[in-house]
Image (cartoon, rainbow, N blue to C red; front, top):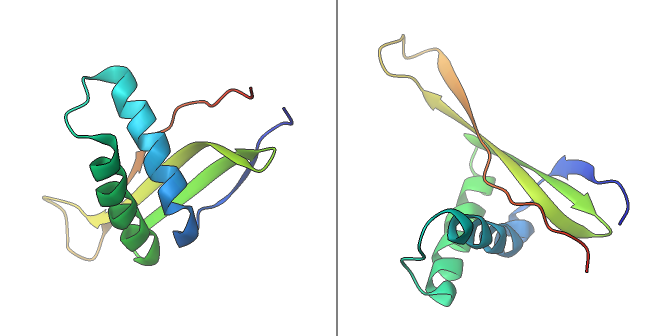
Length: 99
């Protein structure tokens, strides 16, 4: 496995990102939704967010495989002026090991 590189995620990465999210969530809590339904719903959500101006995602990629993600959501904060943005980093990734 080569050292990972980081790049901006693309809408076309949504299915892979959804699969990583399913793997991550299944590792920390019982699965509440069948995998195909989750992947379809999550990939659609992620694809639309990657197309929006208030979400950013970066992927770590090794050997042409996405092995991790970091999401940044820019949103209007609560209790602060509307013209200021609150930035939050949401990391939802799980390492993938080469087989």
